[in-house]
Image (tube, helix red, strand yellow):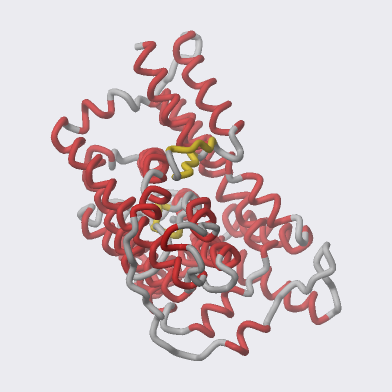
Length: 433
């Protein structure tokens, strides 16, 4: 972004050092949520779950694969998906059939096998879109549907921002204020890396506060350095090939129904952010194929499913640098970092309060993009039909905070609030048309 707040589509005009800083900023934006997934999964499997190293490698390599399949046009970063957490928890608690008396660590490959199948289901929808044409599909996804869905994507993340920030409001406010100050009053390069500056300055503040004896609101240490000492300096990723079992597949694969709907919403958000129609070019079939194959690859090597990250969409809006090359630099950083456990653990010590403070901006930006999508497309809310469609999407997307869980045979399926909002919005829009 220059001093006139103009969009930069080719970051090479900034020079390589600045591009590297922008890539680092995107990596920091995705890092917290991406490594949180294996941390949560490990709690389900009593410490025998997913590897953070493999997770980072899968995120970086999956992002590069996505960019290759989408003709290097879509500035999206693929990080760990939270949608499959319920599936992991279910498989961890399986005690029938082959899972009877099976050690927790031996169950993980079967869960990852289910993720592979879930990723391949994306290819089915991509093929359907390729055959019938994206224009026919997009008839069911007008701005009156995609706009409110994008708004829900941002607002549904809001509780996460508050939950992280309240661990230490002082540090969260420092992170938030730093981002605002550099974005509004910054000059030159500092104006396009406000997220990175927010992380660095608030982390330094956290170190100082801890040295002065300050604690978090719950009495815990602001920064936990213990894991750094235990980690090795450099090592290969502990890849584990997946295994397949029908029970695990029936648990994990149906979740793809929800994540595919979320994918459409995320691509709509990125399109609105960049002012380009990525659903048409390179095409929704290509973005689905890229996301699906990245997810299948992650499951194949023992990692969590991937998904396009809203956090990075927020960074695109804030920095005004929309060049996909910057995202690919962040992906390369993630891959390199996966070889250095000690460095990954050092970044992992970033306090939750910092993530929360920065998320105030990122998540709000996503919702603002949704509002802009509605306004710029002149959606008429004096029209009762449009009002009803938007109302159902907003209430569904924000009201079903825990999603909707149901059972098909022995499989437990949870549709997330965003998936439900997408499904209900698409159906209602079609019926009322």
